[in-house]
Amino acid sequence: MKKIFVIVGGLVVAGGAFGYYFLGNNQNIEAAPAGQVTRIVTIERGDLNLTVSANGVVQPINRIEVKSKASGQIEQLNIEEGLFVEKGTLLIALDQKTAQNDFDQAKADLALAEASASQQENNHRRAEELFTKALISQQERDQINVEYVRAKSQLLKARAALATMQERLQDTRIVAPSSGIVLTKNVEIGQIISSGVSNVGGGTVLAAIADMDQVHVETNVDEVDIGKVREGQRARVVADAFPDDGFNGEVIRISPLGKSQQNVTTFGVVILVRNLNGKLKAGMSCSVDIEIFRRQQVVLVPNEALKDPRSEQGRTLLASLRTEGEKEARESVKEDSTKSAGATTANGGQFDFRAMREKTQNMSPEERRKFFQEQMAKMTPEQRERLAQMRQRGGGGQGGSGGGGGGGMMFFGGGDGPVPRSRRAAQVSNENEVRERLVMVREGKEFVPRQIKVGPSNFDQSEVIEGLKEGEEIQIVTISRAKLASEQMTERMRNMNSMGGIGGGAVRGGGR
Image (cartoon, rainbow, N blue to C red; front, side, top):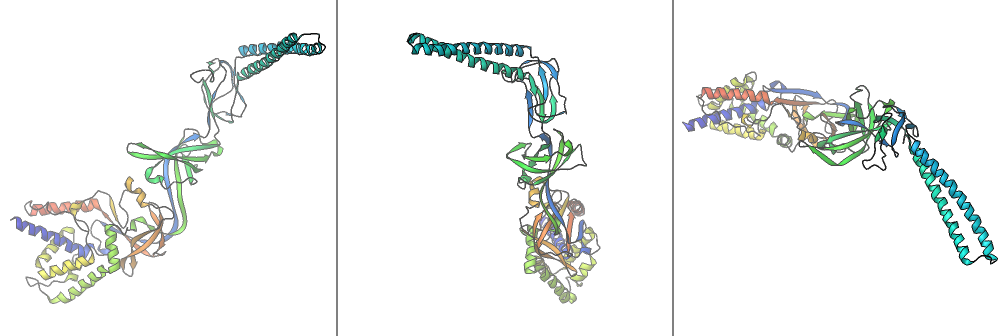
């Protein structure tokens, strides 16, 4: 019994392969199998651009925290959040009583030091005259010189003390260190603040000021895209608060160190943006589009029509392109149909390949499967061998049902449905990169593979460098994997029921 079931299973597989060769591999768009969608696209010219998108936050270029060198109580407060201030504008005035008293005392000390220095200078001059006339001793002369030097030293100290007290007095008046907008105000009138110089904790932060004429937009770019980003590239920034306004910027810095979070690595990118009319505020969220390249009026081809010659399907198409194996197989089919017009099967019936093909065009998948099983049963060993040879020359079929993949759309010739994050970088190219690809191009009534060269590409289209001209038609075939898997599962279940539930798991996906 086991041997019988194996034979039956092999017959089913052979019948499926037989049907695919005569129907599934047909390039005629009117004969597309169920679950297959075919589109004809005319090659046109257009603009091609690639952008890398990310989210960012507006940050001021120079944010200054205003602190006071002096300690004391606030008597005057001239700032409010959002207020624009010029450099040198008085922001806060502190109580000056102590600082003023210290200044006045230092001023008095200076006056005393000046008088003492003047007196000692006169004494020194008279002592020199008397010593010349030998009216005083050397010891007396030296003592007068010491007093003169001491007086000059006290004068210098008094002047330095006065300058220090004057600076401390000025420190009670806190002015804007630069022109800009007051971002934050952290104090109120009457509050006692601590010095930012003498206090261990760094002192009280009074306010924050930033120049917002130009701002930075800090964003994080995924590692699969960061290789395309360069300093100097243009960027377009749109704030969430102003969706209708765009701001032009430029990439000025790319972080050399990535940050990983939840298994996703990103790199910091800083965009310099001119803040027209001051609309952009610090902390605003925005979207950023970094322009990688822009090409105008070039010949474009959809990416879903392209096939990599290194892939399995690409190698199959390339082989048929170079050896014309598929054409040879079709000619062989026609030749066999003519030669076998009078041939008989094991039960004496006619076996016409062309007639079989035309007969099964409008059949459902189930009817087609049963039909091929019947025809395979009628074929002679010689006919089966010839069929296998023709199929081998013409290229392999699609994968079987058991090979299964994910849902979504599988694009023959380039597209693979939803783009996984790990493969996004492979679907786009840099501006100067040239790649070889295969497309199905209309030649007469048929679509044949052609090798072309493409250059820059984004996620949708690629620029044609060589091999395609404007106005030519190409074929794009997409197959819904989910739909095919559902139909194939239904057929397997029916086969299992009709065979008593035996052999259902023996057929696995294969194909080439």
